[in-house]
Length: 335
Image (cartoon, rainbow, N blue to C red):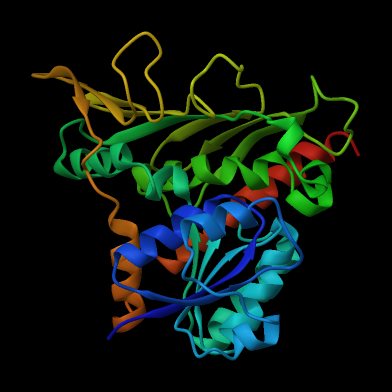
């Protein structure tokens, strides 16, 4: 069975990787729909010149596709997902998959009623080969039982290229809902936790007060029966760094640790996907660039077989619920 998919909304560059990686699985893109002319449109058309644009959202929803990729403005993603699921499509949405708890409730209800898959592409896990290798190493037991993760998600602001919605709190959802959902996903995944308690959540706008809707710093502390985690996210990546952010993940186990320098190794080896492994018998840096990205193929098989090998639906819901509740907790202290 050759899967057919569509793209709904091109407002974030993540749609490039989502589309490319689904094409690599052998899936076929029937076309895309987007509202207006987002800044990402030219890049999408250059990368995928053979993909045609639907004349309307209705035409896209009636295309008969098996899967909808969604990378619209964050506040609009939930409604598009619900519409597509009611047209018998499964969903891969850019993070955040929704921006309010009421939207998440609507998605949960729709999934229960339709039996469709709602999957958030947490790209800092699913599009990073070093995380694939870390997953394999953790599963093999080389660092023992995972008891803590530290996830750092710095990003470059790129102010001049950002659309207006990027600076509007109600449109992008807040920094914890948006960026920190990545690190919450990794905490739950690597500790094997079903959910967690939010011990601390904080957001601030330290350097961009001319844009009161922007949050440029955030942090979260989590605790579950399996372990604890700390998350720090920001929009402060300096211009001299050769990539958009020095994203890192440290996974602490009872018998060792793994550190991922995902996108750059400042002062070290060139390229991306640097994995450091230290345990009782090994102390080494590993080039993980060729470890693969299994999420996309697994999702394709899940769509065919109605399984949950790419990500459990309960996990996806739990990540977004924690991100949204952390956002509420952080902002509640100031309101």
